[in-house]
Length: 146
Image (cartoon, rainbow, N blue to C red):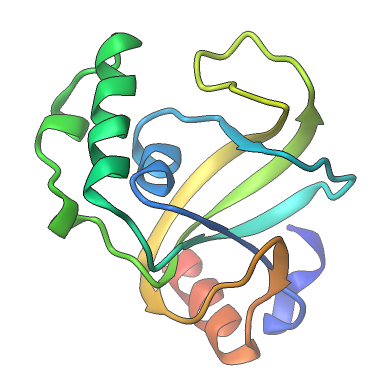
């Protein structure tokens, strides 16, 4: 997969919860951003440290309005959603400015595929794409091979 074998240079993107959870378990195939990218390839999904009650409530309202209900949603509380570390891997396959997905809000959407959860690995996040520390990237790789 991509140029990150050996734990070097693994790209990551921080996404606030509960949206990171939705990417891994809820079929959210679009990550909305206000900037575009030419990057395509594997991407570690970092769950940002912050999440407010209002954000969690807005997520539940969005899912309800969109008809996205199910056990994957109703069983989760704010406390269930891990934050401040890597929670999975995805493949970034495109960046679009329009998409038929109900998840697309724009102005840009990163089209994601092949979500793969990993055991939570604490680490600091950053804005935009960032390289994971080598020891974190190695733990992600190890988890994906198990």
